[in-house]
Image (cartoon, rainbow, N blue to C red):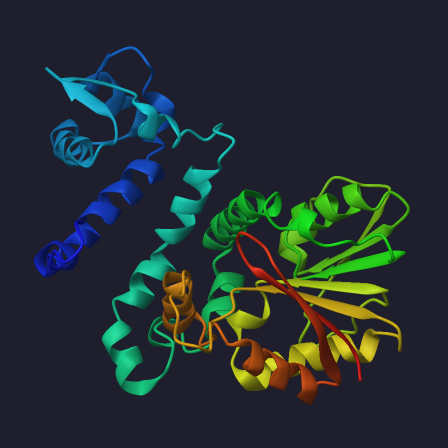
Length: 326
């Protein structure tokens, strides 16, 4: 958009049509059925289990948005659609499947109620909240975990090299998902060993790694492992202030007097400058009741839990907030 050109608000209002068409295409694994050579859409529709007439209309709209090529009833890949294949190293398909999950779509249908009440939209779908919903819907939980893994993998290479992890002998990743961040950190610290802690359904089928001990549980209710360094990547922003302090207090209870805590988070500038993660902040609002925070707000939460900020490291993606015991 050219400088000074007004925002096209009607286009914004109907943009959910664009995203929903993309969700449907990815949920159908359409990109895996399409090839670089033109194929009849009738044949492709049969493979993905779609009505050819309906799929044609979705594909035409995606083509108008720059995704796929389609002409004379035949469909083939362009660069954008090729990135949606399950085997694409960018992991976009997994991320898009997560964003299009029923629990997310349904929760954001209640966004107006969220803004009026302050309650996450997920609570209008399941009163127990987002993570309880996932626990009771294992299919969606699996898609969510894979999507979060894809998101983490996309960020790791732009974050990990900016911090020196070599002083630590034992590094614990709390809420560490499938362990991609922890393994990347251990690659930088060949003398260290790791502990991966997350929900049982996330870590139960992980392949054995001689340098990583896997523990399952809840960081809100279970005893956490001892470690020299704790990683909490995109964890604290999921929670209200009260619950965030509870998580940080649990880590403090497990820590030694010399332990270090590292938060990987988007930090809201407190000087009113542009914030690049407004979309993440709205996801937190609509889904879990958490939020992105300023450095002063993180420092306050850490202080309540017995930590103090010792330094911050800016990376091209997020800020690493280093804290020590106080």
